[in-house]
Length: 303
Ligand code: NAI
Image 1 (spheres, rainbow, N blue to C red):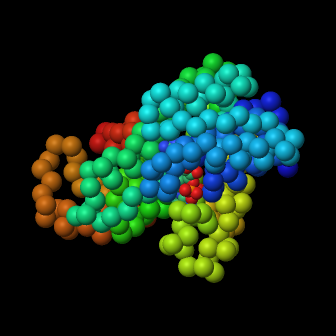
Image 2 (tube, protein in one colour; image 1 turned 90 degrees about the vertical axis):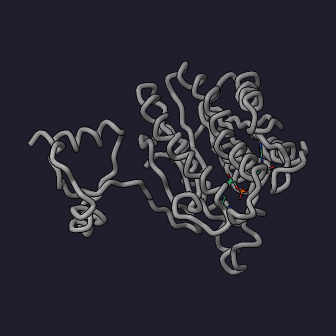
Image 3 (cartoon, rainbow, N blue to C red; image 1 turned 135 degrees about the horizontal axis):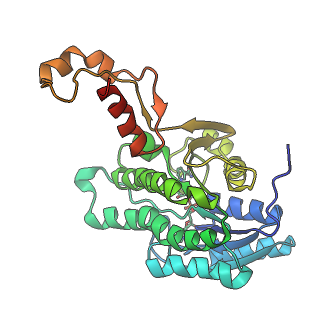
């Protein structure tokens, strides 16, 4: 067991002025990282902006003897993403770790969900991940080293009434990550996602008070530190985390059943007759790429 340290590493944390992001920024700094504290300083619904949020976290890090630089750009624009990474490169000469964490909510069930609410939530969470990750990966590739964390959510992975926009964004991030894992494997860049649950302004009206007290951001920071560390070799995984509970979750593919041979006609009645085997998750496995899935079926068809 080795100590997890980030000496000579530069970590960018988006939305690090409050909640989970703040706890990551403080922990990275405590463990030796130079930290870019990005925060727009917006309200929970994404409105407004202020330098205060990022500045206070930077001050706290510096007072404790750490190194940090503030950035106030919104992750929701390409220019904002580029500026965030540029802040890391200008202040500290590198961008080794990126935690895509900034987030907002605009909750309504679909009939009441406006186009604006759809667009802004996808702009911050999904396009935001694109905007910051793209320039960050360019910097990481040059150094043949990088660690990226995406903040997904159980809302996307499993669903939640009234959060269709947020759920789509949080699940979209998983598809985005899956492809980046393949594109960046040879550069020693590891990308993983977390689905956290913790007390913050985002959850203060949702979580019952006894649970709110027990689900601390400080329970999420340890897995973010681990996944961001040099020691971590995992990539492309998704982890639930809350209140000291950590669990891998995954999109999986079951063994299924081959009822055709690629040539003969398969009918709806054949599907009906084989439904139990088709819907069963027996022998489910994770799949590393679409080619792997094609390969599996091709091997069955060649028998
Ligand atoms: P929070 O509201 O306490 O913190 C989010 C921070 O992001 C705020 O400081 C805000 O100013 C900043 N931000 C918002 N829009 C921004 C933008 N466009 N550019 C830069 N910064 C921006 O929320 P919390 O709970 O700390 O959430 C952090 C992340 O974790 C979010 O992505 C959220 O969706 C995700 N999450 C949180 C859960 C929880 O239980 N708290 C559950 C599942 C996911």
